[in-house]
Length: 332
Image 1 (cartoon, rainbow, N blue to C red):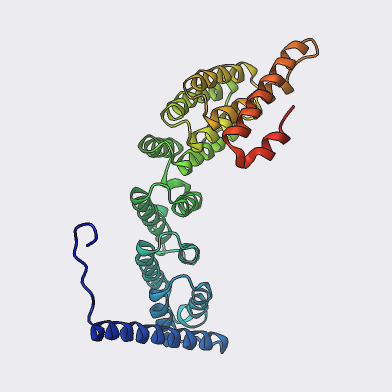
Image 2: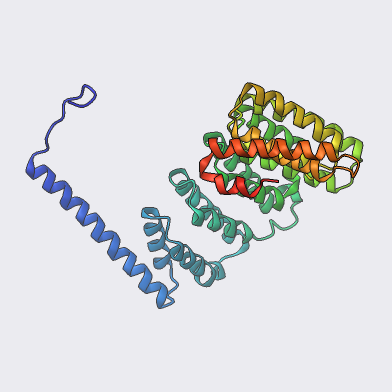
């Protein structure tokens, strides 16, 4: 019995038949692999070869060399015989093929790579169509829809997040910065541990600020972001995602008023969670930044900061012994 279910022993003939079936499937797979590899080495580019890669990749999408062979067949045998409309139609079929593969293997690099390659090969057209009706806009919009559905299923799939950034960078007109901030906030509020959403949020703000924004505006935005990230820190002080975003907001610590304020906030959290590794690590990092900005007439304050850092580093060696050497290196 196992979990209340009675185990049944397979009859010898049933077991033998199942093993023979598995052996036959393996033999067929190996023969197919050898056939495709031999054709690739011989530089044979035909529709038949293309169909064989479809069959093989359907069985095992981890074969990067077979994806490469498939692209060579497209370039050397299929695309040259097609009109722009035909090329676009074939590329759409390729995207559909990889969509099916991603449903089963959402974290396989080669599938995502082939998808990017397909998008780069979409021809301009149809002739005379406005940008919003172009083939490229059609596929980019479709890609954004598909990848966001994948993120609904697994919000922390970093392959999907990276691909989504690629899509948006390729066609910025798909999503405004304001829409993107709303999207990342939605994902963050659904799960504060979504590192990719925090990271994307930092990318959006960095791009906006590079365009030229006043220091007052940046400070106002950061203050609102500190409030958002503080909710995450108090919800799960052991999760690193929000701490890393907090560290990005602090930056070099040039704004000492903000730096001191955030140190005080983290010390309040530490009082509640005295063994929080990330509280201690962050306080050490921020107090070291503060110490580096001490003035010559603040020797007493500098001495206190060093003592506080060393005390916390000593505690970190106890609660996080695997990184003991690292903490010893940080002693002031």
